[in-house]
Amino acid sequence: MKSYKFKLSKLILIFLIAALVAAVGGICLTIYRIDKYGFSTVLLGIQHVVILLACVLLIVILVSILIRSVYQITDKEVVLWFGIIKSAYKIADIESVHLFTKTNKLVLYFKNDRYTVIVVKPEWYNEFTKEILSKNDKIRYDVSTTDGTDEEE
Image (cartoon, rainbow, N blue to C red; front, side):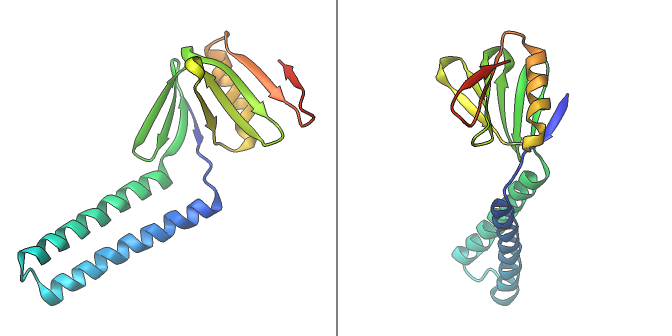
């Protein structure tokens, strides 16, 4: 099973790191508030617990996105792991793979007029496409050139 790392933009990476820093800051601030005020009222205790749980959950989700955001191609599926979220697309349902060279996007088209854009390094498009095509020879591969014409391979 081959894996292709999800390509996150620099802006998204900055937002993820900023959110991680904010979550850690939220935990530190809540621990300080627990130390200073304790659990003097039920409402304050509930507030401390909810903030700590939310920050820990946020850290788990953000770290999982940074560590495990990949496409995996198995014999029957293309699996997208976006952190702890898993999406699977059956290779048998793929009708065509289309590379838009003008926008540099690789798109998988499925039955029932669905599609998904593959977000990996452009250098991996050929290898990614070849692997999918090797799993199902009925999948059509198209390339849109910059002048608007299509060519099939």
